[in-house]
Image (cartoon, rainbow, N blue to C red; front, side):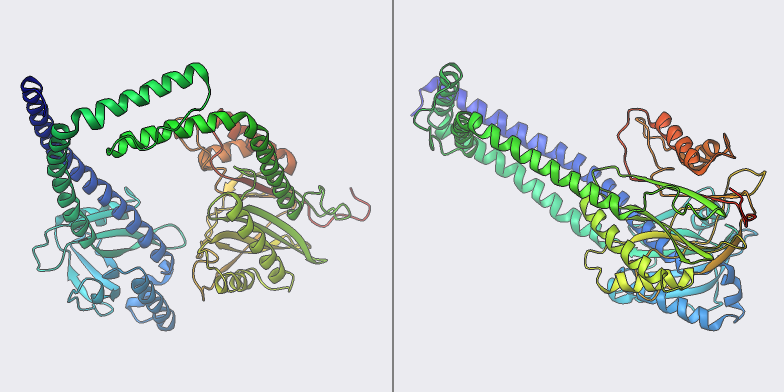
Length: 545
């Protein structure tokens, strides 16, 4: 039994620790709950925005108003079916597309309205096509107007305690745009918020139980085992660490010297440290050799990936109608970007640039598989849209890792300069006609390859005049980031291209890379950086160089 003075001291220590733990637990619980709620809402908002953004890709903005009047009925039915499938797969309550009255945003017309009551046991009734309704309140009107004025990329509304009898939910609104980038409607996704409430309740219970339990256990342990289980074992650990630091030799292990897990773990760590230090010199050579082996394998993987991409320039020395140059600089030893170019026949050149989701070895393996599939489809003489369609079907058929790839593919008719192209969620291409400036060509994006079966892609045409240039790139260029988190952006990219607009394709890529390096300086490369530039010369006289 502890002496009287020590006993009183132990009681004081126990009381102070217990009170401090309870008070600390209350403060931490409050802060943790607020942080937890804010973080959860932010994640909910961000993930729901991505859901809505993906759903908006499925809607043809050019025909949105025409659907209300009954035009394009077949296309409307197909889009509605896809949205219905997407609503079920994403486990959301509602996906609806509306056209607000832009005079005061106080009314809107329903175009699509998909309901999934099974997600949250709701009782929503789908609106019919053309259903007219007053805007719920001023908050919605303000958010409609902000989206139409392009003051926000998306808007989110939380209904933690709805007054209309429905369950708590979050609604994310994104604009639906036509091919001219004009906002023609708004797509809304309503997602149940019960996960927030369900997660918050056990969080509070766990904090409260842990706080009071820790206070009780701390008092009991300190009262009974203050000397035996803490002071003595800690002194043994300290003495052994001091001895080993002086002698650097291993003796009998400390073993289990206390019932307190932390002290026992500390003793075990000291024992392990002594063993590891004794064997360190012996193992150093083996560890060094292993690191060298891994480095050699990564270098081999880099070489294999480089060999998969065409890297001989000029690629077609006997063809003077065009010239091109391309490069791929991975963020890690291997990357997920790729480019390709090859002659389908004597008058058609296929151009490809793509970006696989993710980085490192998994992205590199997916990249090589995607490149082989896409090239195989292209060499069959298909159109650009058919190439993407068949590639998407082949990848989706065995895409167990749920990765995807953005692709821009174009087929140049060499004799005329006409390019037939299709875009599967990739960056906008850049065009420079003779005596003009480099400009973004804001083509219509289709869905990413590998994301969903049955997707069809739209083609478009553009014509290169002799002397024109086409510049393709992955998001590693505009999203290159400096130490402060600022992105390089497409404006700086266009400035770099237009500093020397008539430069040879190889020099064009050097100019852009120099501008990126000058912007990011010592910041680590975040993403793969891939570029391709084509110079179209047109039909040349015989003997012309």
